[in-house]
Image 1 (cartoon, rainbow, N blue to C red):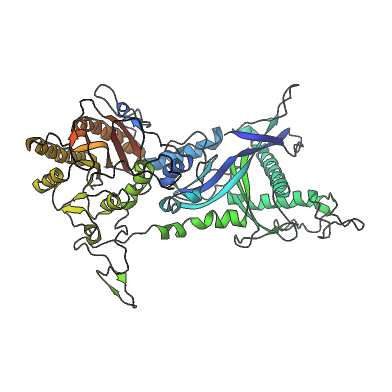
Image 2 (cartoon, helix red, strand yellow):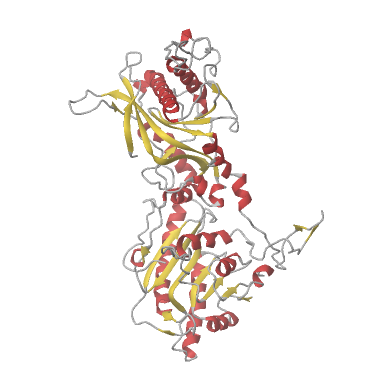
Length: 609
């Protein structure tokens, strides 16, 4: 982690041990996020802006070399331990060696993963585990968790903004040119177990002092009227931290006096510093850890300030302070149920294609009522897969026109789109609504939603991808700028079917003597959901490599079908040189744990749409 503005606070040795603390300011836009572990990699990508670069086709795979994908597949093929076992192993050993646990998925080096289940500091008890959840500390985020898509925010339990990092260690002898800084040792051996409680007390006391100083220096804090909510992780430290914070405030607050009143100079009517020991303060009851000059509350809606403290390991913790507006209205109010309500899906009957039960203007319900449902309402959760691809990969990212205040049109919108394995039609909706394609060919043996069929330009072929009717429509609507598939079959089977169908259409174009027409134009894009077997990390990584190896061979065939087409006349002059090809592998928010989405782009220029 990168830090600035290093400050040493309250560095007096405790019980003869030369333990001191360093408090540093974290990078801007640093957050603690509690979220479902299954979505950790995806939400980290979104917050940090990683996985945004297109990779050249040469890195996908060649016949002479293995797939060049950043995966960690076990060297031993017999090692089939699932991700849960790996995750437990890493969390149980991480606090003995490093600042952060290493999860089953690869994390960016500047993200701290705080174990949610591990041995307590004194080794006698275990923290309560939040099954299926991970706690991440994400510094210098490009995007606030409150700004993520509804599908992402739906997976977040809570979040807090962090501002400071506290570390405890033994002080090194300073050189003439250096400041005193603790020597951090994150490993606590059994020989040092007697000092674990001392280390914890130093950590909590210095964290409490830094929290108080931050309240005084940077917040409009009033000790007599402002209520404070304390969120401490793990919860077993709540009492100890509250006691440390109340004691520090009683000793150092100029607003506090031993009878609970404000210390005021009778002549100048100004608050005067009053330094008191904890024993002299009548406001602190040592049988009640929450008593003291500060007013604590459990209510997030009543609290003027929310203090979040997270212990990372035995020698370090992070904290942040937010006011009520920042913590609730601008952040935590946007998660869970609020976000779930924004994931709008109006499903349809799989047999008839009619909309499912919907309340009428009265109090009864009926089937097939479409009066209250917009024609563009998503018919399935899969809609949000391609919508995310559109927003991240297919929009034109050129500068907004300063006169019209509008973005340039998408480079794909002048030609047809094809949806292979379309039922019930969520991806066809995105092709029509978001990409504004004039024609959308939807191919699937199953029923297409009636609302999708009513969209202008949508043609449904009810049959196999490579059937004669489908090939005939491909020839009629060519060239295509977008081809997508979210078919519910294994990745090997779907790749074979897609290439077979497109190959037949290309052959029909050649046989018809339409040498001035092509199947795929440039720029064009192919989006395929790779359905990978099983959910363990080892299995997913291994099968993703196999999928990319197979896909690379098929892409080489597709490259021969690409030409430069006219958007009006639908004619083209095939180019002698090969198109530029690059790709992305995405784990979309709407993907399942064992799905990955591959986006392949064909183009003739180096300009990125």
